[in-house]
Amino acid sequence: MVRLPIQDRKSEQMIYDLMIRTPDGTFVPFRDIATLERGRAYTTIERRNGRRVVQVSADVTPRSRATEVLADLAQNVLPELIRHYPGLTYSFEGHQADIRESMGSLRTTFLLALLAIYAMLAIPFRSYLQPLIVMLSIPYGIVGAFLGHLIMGFDLCIPSMFGIVALSGVVVNDALVMISFANYHNRQEGLPPVDAIYKAATQRFRPIMLTTLTTFGGLAPMIFETSRQARFLIPMALSLGYGILFSTFIVLLIVPSMFIIINDIKNMLNHLK
Image 1 (cartoon, rainbow, N blue to C red):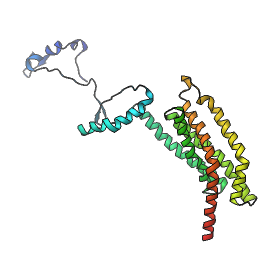
Image 2: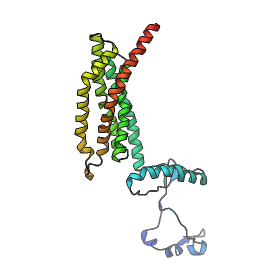
Image 3: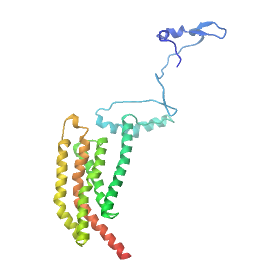
């Protein structure tokens, strides 16, 4: 950057009086050889990947409605601007960029966690299908986490996603206990699959319910906390607490049914062979 010393550019008049050297070596005032016009310009010009960028920032009140405002901008306002100004592109940066980065990392972490859970279940079960029965409680736990946010009036956020990732490793416990007992009765005692899962469900009903209620009870003080200091932890507790609570009832209903269905499919395939 080349510019005059600060004492020579304090006022507009100094530009008019600026002495310009001519080709013959003489100096004349700027006002005698050029016309100065007032205009508007950016104080700074920023570029990214060779393209000029302009940052537009705003505060949303209340902050919980920020997601709705951004969705409306992306759906209604920004497409209209792009139609009027071809070549215009946009992206949400700042806090939104941090959220995108965190969500991308969480997606990768969540998939790795699911693969690890499946591998750890497949080895002791000695089956490729039974781990899927146990992991069936994970999507229902996620639904419970969403319902918990809806009931308590919270929006989904990054701590909510952290809670859902942690939830995927917790909700499988109840189904794991039930399927493990059903396999024991089926393989060791020789009971039919229907009788085995029925006996496992009746024997493990009380431990499953107690585990769920004690877990939710331990998270309840955080879920119903009203202080501002705890509000950033409440979404994580909601995901865990309501996810476990909702998935327990699914485990008691869906998992036994899937256990019997898969055994029926195996028997059908064996008869076909």
